[in-house]
Amino acid sequence: MSPEQFFELMLKELEVHTEMQPYYKFLGKQSSWHFRRNYFLERLRYIQKHIVDGGEKNLEIWDCGCGYGTTCLFLAMNGIKTYGTTLEFYFETVQKRKDYWSQYGDTSLFTCTYENLFDNQPAPNSYNWIIVQDTLHHLEPINDALQIFNKSLRKGGKILSVEENGNNIIQRIKLYKYRGNKRIITIWDERLQKDILIGNENIRSLANWRTLFEKNGFSIPDSMVQYVRYYLPFQYRSADPEKLLQKEREIQAAKGFRREYFFFGLNFIAEKK
Image: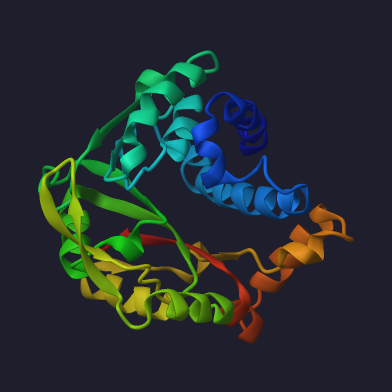
């Protein structure tokens, strides 16, 4: 199933599972519809390119911070088995989603549990891939988390990360107003009945991520890096969304000031050394 097909079916699902609408916002303002669609699809295409189209068989994949399970469901629709873990309050919604998607593919390929990364560490050499989507900036202590990832991956294993770009000027201003310099906080998890250390929207630049990953036994090849979402919602109102997407891809393909400081999203793959 292609990302575009998955997206169309997910729009229909949002009409059923209305509790997800505030998160995905595709059924909200029509003026920002193409803006949100392009961003969602580019991230999913990145996952498709590196995992689905890779042709590897019998993959063992861990989606750490799977949230609503969207990526896991996409992989299941493409015949790929994934294990998801989350600490999100909407964990109960996952089973309802599996019921919906079972009419389009084998949702038994997706399993999910509510657990803390540091409480239930996987056995060594368990996975070919680890997916961390909108999750890396929440993991603390980050070096401990990366060490767990390293041990959990098999030889040649990889981490696929979908993140916000910590150098984005607009986002840095917004987050500073939101949390100041308080980048790490402690929260109480009602379900686990314990305090958990968490990154408070602690987004980082590619250079900072590269330093952290190198320190913990990974490398991030330039060829595996992608920046996404350059244009703002108002720029979609009088332009062809496909042409904007193509221009965005051209801009991100060249290193420079615009790519480093004005793209919102950052995708990269870290390879275990």
